[in-house]
Amino acid sequence: MQYCSQCVYPMVSAVPLNFDEAQVCSGCRVHAQKASIDWNERKIWLLELVDEYRVTDGSNYDCIIPVSGGKDSWFQTYYAKEVLGLNPLLVTYNGNNYLDVGLRNLKRMREVFGVDHHFFSPSPTLLKKLNRLCFKKMGDMNWHAHAGIFTYPVQVAVKMNIPLIIWGEHGYTDLGGMFSMKDLIEMTAKFRLEHAQRGFDWFDMLDAANPGNEEGIQARDMLWCKYPTDEELDEVGVRGIYLGNFVDWDANQQTELMKKFGFEEAPFEFERTYRRISNLDDMHENGMHDYLKFIKFGYGRCSDHVCKDIRGGKMTREEGIERVRRYDHVKSRDLLRWLEYTGMSEAEFDRVADTFRDARVWAKNADGLWEKDNIWGRRSAYLVPKLSEANPDWRQFRQEVAPG
Image (tube, rainbow, N blue to C red):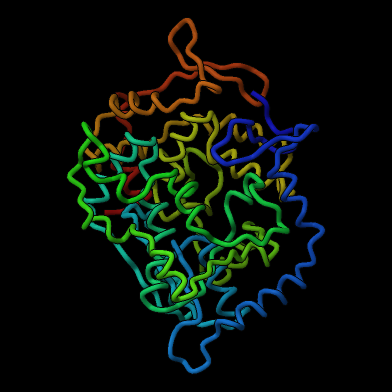
């Protein structure tokens, strides 16, 4: 396995990236482009762009901002309202797994910035079905959350005739350098389907598409996941821009600013990463959802955070490698909550998860253990623990992250 010589990303990655002749990944190369960009000029471009969408007669909102209540949502809302002078409508897709601190942040954001908020929650019965089905189908129990945030706000834009949608950063460009910073890319239906939704759409969740694994999901259950037609998008003129194309995006600095407005980081340590400011809207994003990325590709969210912090000058590569060694492999306790939530056993979870291991990363050794090459230069075998047998204090964990 090859690893980037500047950050810690492996060649086999969950995001599209490539390595150059110096073994530097495209994510690092694209990040370096930011130093040569005139951000004052980009701000002027942005102001000119949003001026086209200002509603001067007070008859509608100026834009939609899809929000989860996290640090990026806060910054998007702050920038749109306080810097650009827009009147935004916040739109949230609720995946039903909020951390207590994440829900507080979401509610406080509306109050702090004085904005209206549209909050949509699918049926918990449906969400449990989608958790089970998508875990078995693609190794991603949070597919519904990706689909929801990239579909429902666009539906609202069409229904309420609000053409401008302001997203935060383009994650695949920020992490893996999928596009150049010079491209000024915008949100597309192609990105939603092929990348955010792993190539699956609402109709792939119906029983007819899942013989032997039917959950009783009907078309009427997935109304929130049906993307508007091209004709509907064109009639309204829907356009999704990324704020990260116009602002020198630095999540750490932006979060420090948002803390002054009242944003809270997690009051506890996560088991799989050192950051306390990210992914507070879903208790499994930093936990078992991310553990599945380690099962598939051999690295996790800690590596993502380390790469961002190395590129931002907050830590050295050597320091980052030690963080990766500590966190990336951990099987976190939130799995027990998810098993209870979905009615699945840990043995079944481990069996299904193993079917998604990438053969370019993982191999079984003579003892039947999964092993892989590591960034610190040693091939290691990983024993998968049985959390249910260890009987950790699950009630205490629930109290820590999601009281009640």
